[in-house]
Image 1 (cartoon, rainbow over the protein chains, first blue to last red):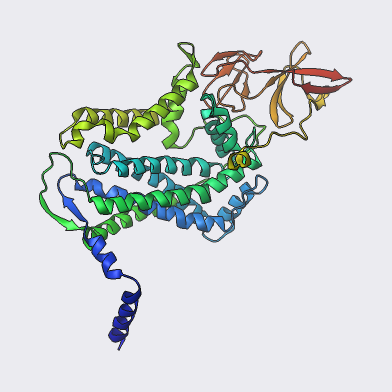
Image 2: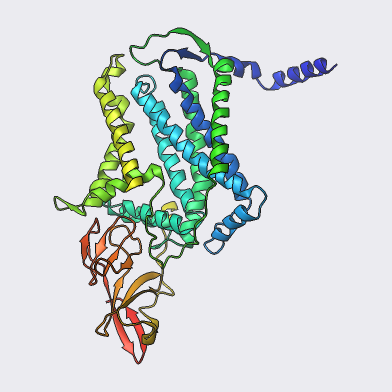
Length: 356
Length: 117
């Protein structure tokens, strides 16, 4: 009886929603198997932690109040009084860290495997936009608890683009909503964090995934496939889910063993506390700003750093069009070396920023 | 139109040109305190010779509020990127590109007023 009902329900849905077509569309993509196949899991892991961000973010928004007089107290209320509130907040904070980490691993693995080459240039471009959006999530979410660390981190971060000519000061006032970090800033950060960035990210993720579905999975230049490819759905999707499960276990462990703390309430008139540092993924910029002198060759040091970061991001986005060799299916060891140098610089500045 | 809407409107009301920050008895000789000038933090320095001076407490690098540090010699340090300023507000090390801007201090009886120069 129940089998009959299920069949009837399936038929009813099939007549209205082309489930079989969707299944065929998903199954049409195959995932190659070779010695670098391991790196294919990190895109899905990034997506998984993004989903955790959405769910926990929605739950936090039920109690959070985006007003400078109440923001800190509302977070303290979530952490201390709402059942499992501390866990939800901790999951949100830790999944943000893991999402950035997975995204960086995914991006550099794509770079080193030259998966950006034709016909996936647009996928790479959308990935770079997603990287910037994820960093934007980190930056805009940081102020929301309105504690000392978040206040000064936002103050520094929002001042960084000020040295850029023409649009720098205007851009900073646009982010802050005023000449200072205050009520207006908090509301703008909240709006960016919970509405503008998520909607934009979902749009780009959809494009990224659809492009991947149409273009298929890239095999690195010169890599031989050791085993027959597997269909993405359901075979690889199951493996993806296993990876998500492992990621969720790590997330739960971090969130419960090292729960996210809440510092003192922000006091705009107090000195920045000793040892204040941004989150690890902003340490390369922080450390570079520390290293570069205020004036270098009679040019403002911040301007040099900002200009260099802007140029590097633009070059990074344009890599598929610069690396002509890999576009022709040839190996391009210079770009591999560039990628490794960037990884070493990022790792070096993160370690230096953390320990000094 | 959208750009006009999102561009912050300059603060017009409420910003005072001169602000009462306290009474002279509140500040011991040789002490440094952060006082509020409208929305800005200002270092009020009561020198050992009995004079009052005021400097912006915002680091000229990226806007963090600096801290008075007594050792090894009295100076103002920024905990954000390590800039240091001497007691006159001159940038002496770190990435800060300019000295801390001074404020004008006036005494009316025992009342201390801080104003932009």
